Image 1 (spheres, rainbow, N blue to C red):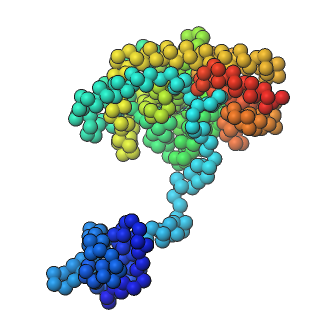
Image 2 (tube, helix red, strand yellow; image 1 turned 30 degrees about the vertical axis):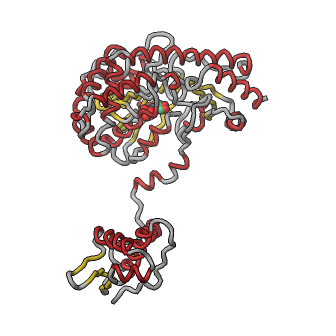
Image 3 (cartoon, rainbow, N blue to C red; image 1 turned 180 degrees about the vertical axis):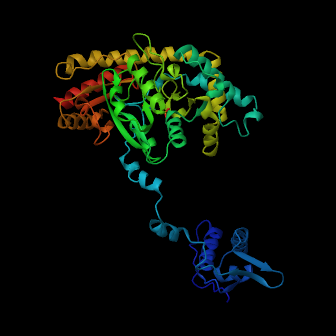
Length: 486
Ligand SMILES: Cc1ncc(COP(=O)(O)O)c(C=O)c1O
């Protein structure tokens, strides 16, 4: 059959060749596979459509390149009809998608995107999870980046080691040994795109669908989601002033993993006591359980000496330590690390290689230089000072305004604090009024696992991040809260 140009309309604007290519492709896709279509010569089609011959030639070239048409010397240009073949128009693909069988992963993810409440945009009081990144030394970082690129680092522009930049791993190992009392080898470290990525890798590697995971309740929702998405069954363990109530673990001998934030529990802000750390490790040894230790803000300790991480107390190679640069540098950097029991390194590195291979080589190399030149340690001290000052501004500003009815707890670590409330109704009321006044407050109920063991005093409350904005902004937010609440 000959292709009839009647019915092909081009709107005369830009991109005529593209429009013609799409119109011809539509015809070919709509013609049954038993037909062979003969296309007009480029000259005749150009005349029929009143376009330049060049336009038709370009459209034909595109169809050739994609295998829709072929030509025989002396015999013209042909296409085989493709209707009912596997190729479908994008519109048809979209329409067909709902009929596809859903994978278990799709099922677990459904609705997650709308449930997730991610605070985006510029920092505001009292957003959770953000450090004083307004103090990040951008100029130093920029200088190190341009030094990296001026070096024309061909060796680092190809595929790198999936475990990460070796120099960076050596520096992290030295830092952890000195600052956190965690003796580890660079070969145990895998550089990730942040703590969240590290937690997700641990979950993917070590859990099968249906496996039980003991998790603090209330907990960090994004970690709970990363565990649930691989099919884990979450077993909430209640908390008190000393962190996770490890005595409850005795009833859960069948857990494959425990996920904990011992340095500074998220979101309550309490620290897991030494006795409980030892109890958790003994339980894990008894029942052959992995322990994922999320040390997301371990650098922030204001009073007292920090307790050794679980990974430093682990005698049987079952603790996976998760660290991040998000809370010292800035979250958008997307750099973190895992410290693994040696036996897990090959498999986890292979899993990493199959996903995103490794974080950008330039950022890893620049972070290594940032640490080696002493900027990292200096910046930690600056961040600790700033966060302490911001914490104090919140505590001191809060006390005269709300201290009577809503006293804040002492906070010796981290970037946030939380306070209990009497009821879910009070929580909803205070949060709604704060948000209407432009102040970000997080309801404690958001962090609770539905239907799971939770200390009654943690069912309702408020969680406040104090590090993301400066003292003046904290003061202004407190005044807005006073207006909103009274
Ligand atoms: C408890 C906890 N773990 C992990 C993360 C994730 O950090 P990252 O930005 O490194 O993925 C956060 C971020 O707020 C957090 O609060």
